[in-house]
Length: 196
Image: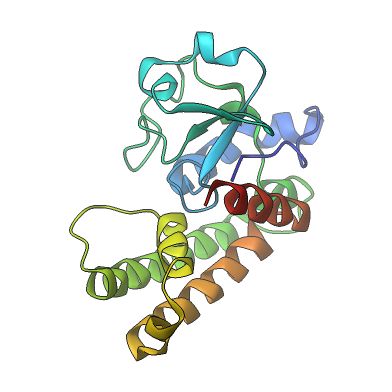
């Protein structure tokens, strides 16, 4: 799914005051970079020409626009090009948690707790998926969801697969509630469906 700009707005005084802490939150999270929230990141028209090399290698287009595949090749538990030139969306995307933090609806402590909770769910899902799909490589949460969606109906009766699907649904609800707007979620379904 592309990183949509639906919750981006010009920085105001509160954002500027919170910016150092927001940057620390972003660096501690990374779910918009590692394939947890989205399968793809949206690019501006003609932005591909100025992308860092590894990002440009993951570039593709559809009738809906220009994108690069996630996880970002520069994300290694944190962004390795945080202060260097990169795609515009990398600096401009603001998740729901950051928007709520800016409005003082949630504390940084609560945000770190939510991030930690998501990591626990992800670890559990990755462990179960290795057993269910017999995979030895790193996969993203979105890839696991796609693999589950491609299972033949007769294979979805397996208890481990049912448990994995249930855990993925729980995590997806958590991500939607805390990180994405409903509009982002609807757009994700549309784009991911068109790519399968």
